Length: 488
Image (cartoon, rainbow, N blue to C red; front, side):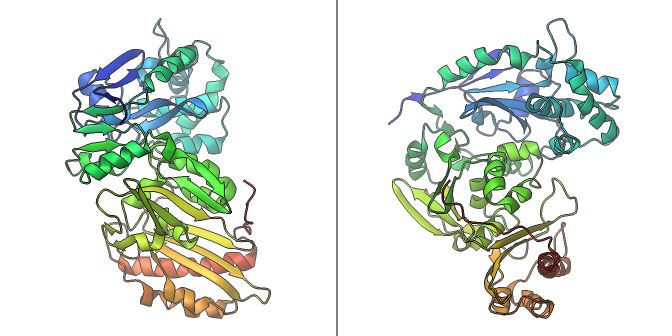
């Protein structure tokens, strides 16, 4: 049994904060604006889409103290223990001078009504700390999660490109304070369980989480809160008691053994993208289109699987790769194919008190091609209408030797296209075979109509994605063959 602490503690700009009476559904945005009168952080969409509430959260990890942009509107206070929260107010110097990021926005006319400006400033600040002279592509990606309705992005991009010309800004607060903040946070990582009246719990370890959840199977597990946050802000759903698991280092590990990539359930999209981009490039490309940078910094792969959404982006390609999910209840563990984890809409093969601990992804065998295509109304930061994932291998006679196809948005769960696979297996990889297999989608799926797409559109898009994969493969534009990496 670990030591128990009855309060959260974090640094807000330059101030130490200790909270013992905090509601599990208290958002960082409300805390900043209502409790601390820090009004620079704005509320726009309250769902992590517009970026007006962007702040930075610094946390100690394997690479030292790392600051990431996050959406304060869906980030819960309960997830902030041993972190440094930085708002736009902290950027100005002691004499009131603007930070170079802010000054560049002024000089380049990057603001009109100003409502979205603090969020843009914080996103550009996070980018500036990583790359003093970012490329246009890096700037556009950093601003994926920030919406502006009046200025337009051209002036903001000019500001981002101009920041480096203001010099290194040796008095930048996060540069000056870095060593001191690092030491303060290191002391605060005391290995204790946090329990605020049984309503808000932060486990000390994965073993502690297993014990807590086995005893409280109706508790809400909160990892990145990119989904649970909307339960609170949009649906007013109670989440008490809430168990915050996003800071468990043990669930953030990624390891490769015997050709299988073991990904901890707490690995964020941002971290997964770096690793998967090297091991399985098509997954890295997909992650770049999941939310904005703020969402990718918070959301986790385990959470995307555990919530069982039929339009979750990661399950279809993982199913196509024959991934397996590791479930844990107390000290007991079991493993099952990911495709079998999803039983029906809103229902997964998970017992009370059982949670997703890791995902095991076989690295594709030599000669395997993987293609993943996401269909949305907007290219960036949009919810999937239909997603198709295709893993296939051709033999020396150009016949389909192996194939797995999984789709999202086509049923109540992420689901394989078994009839389409059967129609293609053993056939020559040619247009006639693909056209015939496209008709089998109607046997595999009965999609629904909703605000994102009609059932007819989804069926047509899914069929066309198969043809797209074929045409790309014969035109030489298909994803490169992926070789198994067993040495990593």
